[in-house]
Length: 91
Image (cartoon, rainbow, N blue to C red):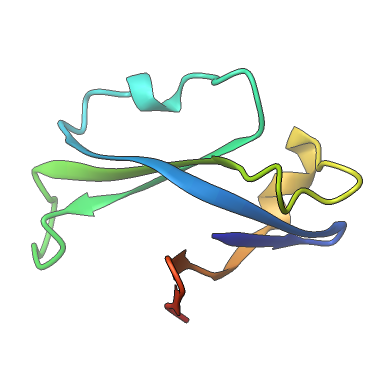
């Protein structure tokens, strides 16, 4: 995933996908490095309060890391601009 902030673009590599109970907030714990945790309702087609949560975790890809890493305070205005699987772009 490419994350764009006012300070530049960073590439993250997905390292986990889980489906969890909505009360399980353990995935939101600090991981000790630069990482992303994306949370959405599951199943995707469900209308209303979905019974589960789809969790995607990703870590900063050091091969694409910019010269300066963003701080936690820089992330709120970020947006994901591109997600890649292998060589396929999923814009």
